[in-house]
Every structure is written in C-alpha cells, then in structure tokens.
Amino acid sequence: MTRAQRLLVGAGGAVVLAALIVAPISLGRYGLYVLSQWTVMTIAAIGLNLTLGYAGQVSLAQGAFVGIGAYAAAILTSHGYPLALAIVVALALSFVVGWLLGYPALRVQHHYLAFVTLAFSTLAFLVFRNEEWLTGGIYGISGVPRPTLFGFSTNKPLPFYYVCLSGLAIVTLAFWGLVRSPWGRAFLALRENPLRAASLGVDTRRYTLMAFAIGSALGGFAGALYAPLTQFIDPTPFTLALSLNLLMMVIIGGSGFFFGPFVGAMIAVLLPEWLRFADRYYLIFYAVLVMLLLIYSPSGVLGILDRYLRSRNARAASAMRASAQAGLSDEAVR
Image 1 (cartoon, rainbow, N blue to C red):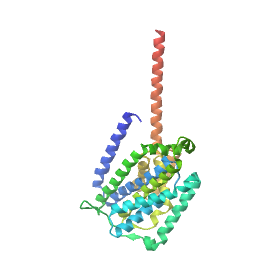
Image 2: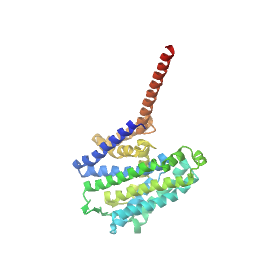
Image 3: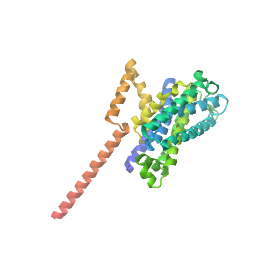
Image 4: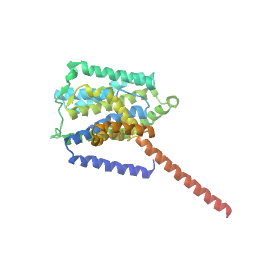
C-alpha cells in the first residue's frame, strides 16, 4: 500500500469513526440496538477472520464461543460481579477452550476440521440447553445488568452503544498491531504454505493453536458484550446458524482483509434492516444480493476493491515503462 493510499484509508477511517460517534445520537432505541449488534458481531467476525482469513484454519465454532462469553458475563454480572471482571473471565475461558480445540487442527485440515468444530458447536449448544443448574436451560438468564462506568449508568441504549463501540475500537487497534507484528506474518505464512513456513523456522504447531485461541477469545469478548446488550440469554441465538452467519460475514467482507469483518457484518446485520421496505420479500432480496456478490467476487467486497487497485497500479506501471522506453528510443535516435 502506497503512502497516498494509507493516508486515504486513515482519512476514511476517521470519517467513519466520527459518523459512528455522532450519527447514532439521532437514532431511536431499535436503531441503536441494531448498530450495537453490528459492533458486537464485528468483534466476533474479527476473531474468525484471524482464524480463517489469516491462519487458514476453518472453524464453525465461533458462535459457540460467543455463547460461552455471553453465559460467562450473564452469570457473573447477575451475581453482582462487574462487567469488566466478566469480560476478563470470558476472554480467559474462551482462550483456553479455543487452545484445546486447536489441537485437532494439528492433525486434520479443511472440511475435516470443519466437522470437528461443528461437533464442538453442537456440544456447546447442548450444554447451554440442558445444564439448567448453570445456564438456566431453555428458560435462560434474564435481567442481565448493564454496567455503571465512572459513575455514569449505561442502562439506556445510547450509553451502552458507546460501550460496545469502545470495545470494537480496542479490538481493532489490538488486531491492527497483531497483523503487523511478526505473529501476523507467521499466521499468513501458515495460511499460504504450512510446509514452507515450517522449513523457514515457523513453529506451525504453536501458531495454529494461537490462531484458534485468540480468535476464540475475541468471540468470547463479543459474547460478554452481547449479554448486557440483550439483557436476556438463552440457547437459541447460539446455534450453528450463528457460526454460519459469522462465517458468511468474513467471506462476504473479504477473508484475509483487515476491514473484511466490518464490511461483512454491515451487510449481514444492517443490510436486512435497510431492505425491510420490501416487506415480507426482504429476505429473498437479501439472499439474492449475497449470492450475486459471491458469484461475481468470491473474495468478497474488498476483493473487488483489491482487484481494482491492483489493475490500476499495473496500468500505471505499464504506462511508466512505456514512457521510459519511449525516452530511451528518442535518446538512441539522437
């Protein structure tokens, strides 16, 4: 990425951030809920993007980790513990479970690994539904409190939206630092060619486990914010459908692109709301749009932009070479 492109991305990011801070002030309760849900799902999708897009490990268990984080937050905050402690517990618990789930990835790959994570997702749902002594079973946990920060209550939708947005900002900065670090380059090497990465001294075993663990921890963090957002937790949201929805967000936005989860979550969470003018047909329109997008660009929305930038740079380079060759020809004639 050139300096001009980096400046353009930075300016665009500043404008989007300003819009996310200012624009929601005029939204109603439901609009704030949908926007808060976008921030939470983006965090979970960022974690899956690390596991899938950067490390190349297929996972259908991200929804289960969102559920683990949500139940951890709901149980702890309902017993009087602060949300900050609940987030730490959700992160740690999801990290440990994700690390353990990463061990099958050391032996199986691709669709075999997808089946392993699918089995874990099913197991987690059964625990959420049947262990009533812990999770409340099908009755769930109601009245999940929202935190009070620095003496200010976040019970109303707008203050808690800013809590969710702050969480997304922290995760974004941490993820930006991670992918630009040697760890990020090791994850990319693991995705492109594990054998070559191992021959170059990359500890593929450790980085595979870390990809699962960190991605799962971000899913737990998203769940810890989801619980006080909805203020009611039951097993229904944490079925395989959530994992598939998060997978769709990563693929539609652009797997392996830094901003892919942001765009993908916007399409998956916000686009159906914008299409509600179509009444009962809005889901049909949404499905058709998604299918056409993936047919046209399997690398997602940002893949289209990436191809355009590569094509433009290639044309610019060709024009410069042609100009240089013309100049050399003129000098030779003289």
